[in-house]
Image 1: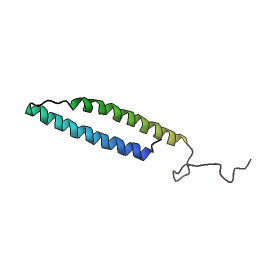
Image 2 (image 1 turned 30 degrees about the vertical axis):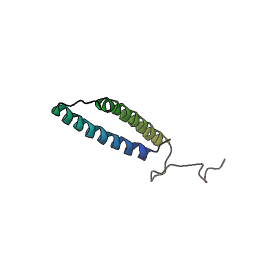
Image 3 (image 1 turned 135 degrees about the vertical axis):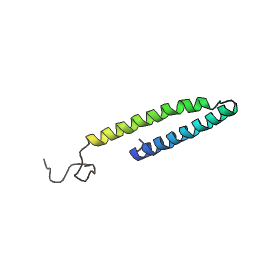
Image 4 (image 1 turned 60 degrees about the horizontal axis):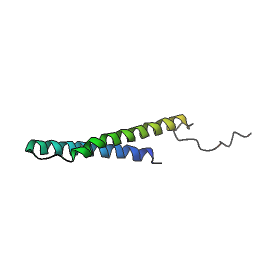
Length: 83
């Protein structure tokens, strides 16, 4: 499972890539050339949406788990909770 930080960086990378490719396609269209790569750009936003959903799921899961006051997750059973 990818980490939350990895998913966030991948979203940022893909968004900048989509933006860059859209600008290139507009330049090609202005020049009157074929824009065959437009198919790829049209599919990339759906991949970004999938990554955003994964990020939101991980953030929600992190919020549901118990944490210390510092925000670090509690792993295992604390020593003062004996049964």
